Image 1 (tube, rainbow over the protein chains, first blue to last red):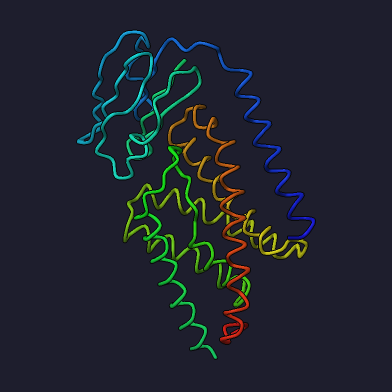
Image 2 (cartoon, one colour; image 1 turned 180 degrees about the vertical axis):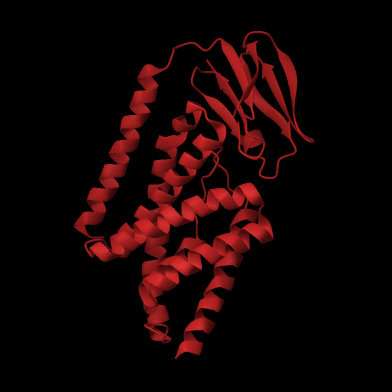
Length: 109
Length: 167
């Protein structure tokens, strides 16, 4: 590795730390509401405290979102990569789950 | 001479496609969309070093289309095209700058790839939620870029030994 490599590496790490701090300090402390957006349209806003299961259709495809014990997760999806299902349950404000193939965002505000 | 170049590029393309496919098969997920090792970039780096910048650019574009048609779909082609183009442009610039080693070029490519995909995701979703992934993707790009760059550095002398250099 040359010197320029190290500087670039340091620059990128610094940048990511900076943006991490930015998001950390600007977020609201306690998440209350679960906002679900599909294909750029807001599907609904749900209480984080009340347990429920929501099925979100996306054409012929679907995602199943579960709100349980103040945590939200995608329990089921027929998307190809299953990343949304593998994402761990979220509970804090600013956290989100994204399903790229279905253009779905589940976020806590 | 020309036939040798075409043959080697074709062989490299096969290897890159296969590596990309195998990488998808291995269940490696950290729960953040878009994070992967990008081992196929190894091949691209080798072409950049051994054959030439123009060939590397052509290779990157063809690889995106082939792997998109074979294993992906339309939206995955758009994501990987944006990522690959930005990555190869950054790597070409870093190569021209001559002050970066192979590891540095690889890191620049990996980070550029992730940034481009984030921007595409932002335009697809039109939600600022996408930017929350940026620190993780930048760090992941550094780690993956370092690994791939180092691996390529190890592979380079072997390829030079068997005569794949400046064909």
